[in-house]
Amino acid sequence: DRSNSDPNDLTDMGEPVWDDSFDIDDPEMQSRMMRICKAVQEKGDDLMLVANAGRQDCFIQQYAEYRRSEGLGFPAHNITDDLRAWIQTEGWHHHREVGFIGDRLRLASATYYVDMNPLDASASELKHLFAQWEQVVKDAQAEYANE
Image 1 (spheres, rainbow, N blue to C red):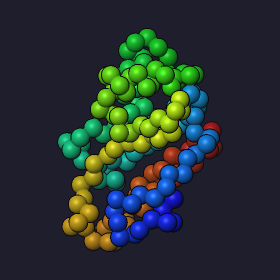
Image 2 (cartoon, one colour; image 1 turned 60 degrees about the vertical axis):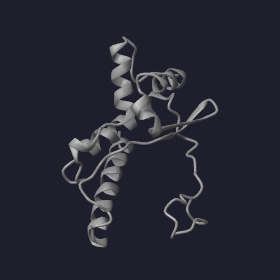
Image 3 (cartoon, rainbow, N blue to C red; image 1 turned 135 degrees about the horizontal axis):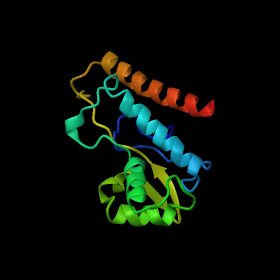
Image 4 (cartoon, rainbow, N blue to C red; image 1 turned 120 degrees about the horizontal axis):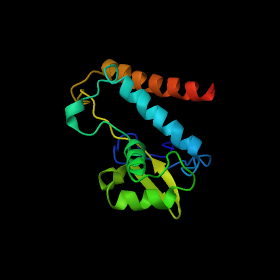
């Protein structure tokens, strides 16, 4: 919630608003996260993703790969403790994409790099790219809402 933040202070991100329905231990939630990540990757050209600028995947994709390589199922129930241990070891490069508060994962994000410098881009270019991102997420949400 940015309602009380200073719009001129880029470091003032406001107060977090948690989605209490988010439960990483629910296999359906894990599947939804995987679908959104895949949708972003499939629209990489529209979103101006830059493949050589860094990782272009979500932590949940790498975590799923790890679980499968260990002979563990994915999606699966009750993965919080295993996910936390993975982030602290093999998944360390994703540590900024997850946030635990107490025993619960409260923050899940992904990092993507785009071929646009916000300092050089026009407002219309930034708005267009933002609209592309919003549409990808909206389409992915509509897809799993209709399942």
